[in-house]
Length: 151
Image (cartoon, rainbow, N blue to C red; front, side, top):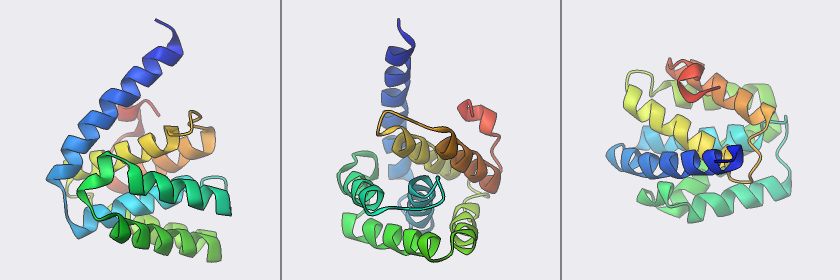
């Protein structure tokens, strides 16, 4: 099996697992952490352009994994975090990481958020080095070894 086929299969398995996990953690902290993760992925290269914002917002609204939350609520939180990252990347990143760190005492929820980040980072078919670095930082924020996700 080609490497690309293995990656697609693994992403599909992770997506199905993530939806099951997300359903278990339907609460405000999890929703905020998920949207902080999405904003960090969108801003992984240091900025969020209008196209990235539009694509990420569209993905959030249509993604099966996140469908357990009202799309309007998720988009509002994504807009909040991405706005903070655009206004001042470093301070916005601190706020996003703080939202993620609220899941540190809940390792199953934290793993599900990390999976959401990987799925979003991989959605365009190119999980690049900046996106991987953002997910690694998120792993560190929630106390999970990045190696657990092959990062």
